[in-house]
Image (cartoon, rainbow, N blue to C red; front, side, top):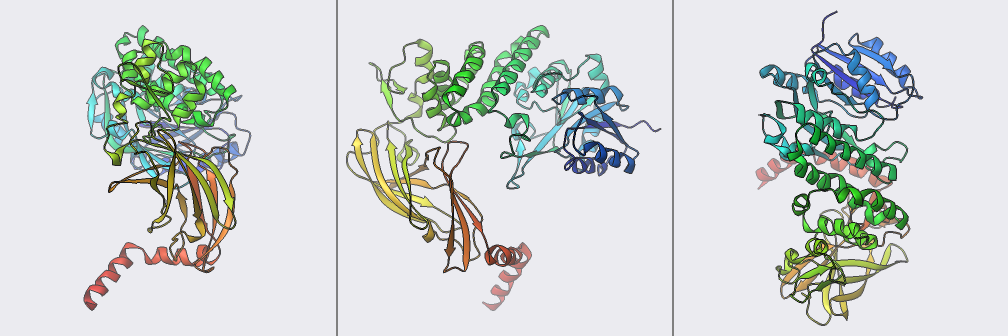
Length: 554
């Protein structure tokens, strides 16, 4: 048999529905001399039958089945490495794909210059809305060969094993295999590969398509989407300790600050965004697992983080879990704290007390947020819905509390508006915020969603209302935090006198900061006829032809 140039391993477990798509992406590769190994982690669904049928269709496909389920990705990958016949290896998950030129491009990088592995860009696709993005785009902007990871430690952030093509000789020389019996094996494997490689090539071309299902059922969610499990936290911390040990034993201890920063900025940050949705028992267990490890990290790594992230970390490390949950709702969205407290020198700190330790004072110092001096359009406030009452029809009555810890707003009533844009036209509902005490205002606004300016052809999408403050000709718009526990409610709204009916769902966002979320779904004739017709008319060629006719008529 012809020796293949590249072996691509597809690992699969109980994924009979998506396996054919993954394999089809390999069969369609522009570089055809490849070996495809389907490595089945002892599936109990129709995967074995599907895999055998695929193997019967293409002589390049080999199917192996583990005698028992390993519960992870490492064992099926390692078994495939054992039987792989090619000098270069790649890995693919059964729910993802390779772009058509992935093998060709990465193999060309190896043949252009002898390197231990080549890597490219990862295209992420949201399954729920089709939105596309590039994973860690700043790391793959140009073609380059890196002579050792110390040359660019930022690459530690790109810890996926699936975005790379490895020289088999490199893996064998260092006996580099995936660690079995643990999750987050990619992080350890990739850290080892980065440190052991003398040289590796980065190309800007997409070489992997990663499908993201943020709302997948718990039973089928990927490991990274199972952060609600305390065992998930334990596994991630365990892998980090293994990486730390490897950095020391391999002579790469100087990378520790960069690796710690990566953990804080990426791994911990994902859990931090979930903290508002966790109960006290979960938070206590999380702190018990996380805090001992956080105490081992480099202080310089903490200093590289945005202030809002440092505040959440310090509140957690200080045992103030309820406040950590409160602070986490502002991550990445410039949401102010409810309150700040100044010491005798005028330094403002997050919360209602001056911190007692040097570390806490350093981490909770919010001077850099410029709460009292930032220009009004970018000033930070905190807007919370403290009461949400459904009214008849499609109306809501919202009681909103605004926190102004920098005391930017003058004493007295404030002009405010609720902003909502379903489609291209904005809905503005003015109301008044009255002072409760210094730095705190409260007001009530009625939101009639039946009067929202939905387009004639309907609107399908999600919107989150904003709150706007107006002050001396300037305005400040910011997100509106909702109660996290109000029940979801769906109502039928007959827009345009019944010509464009929609189902409208009101719900807490359920993720990120937890905004009030409104979801429009066209139904009836709007969904079956009007929207498909408008989409056809709105195609670029049709629009251009219409513009041409209009210009001739003028």
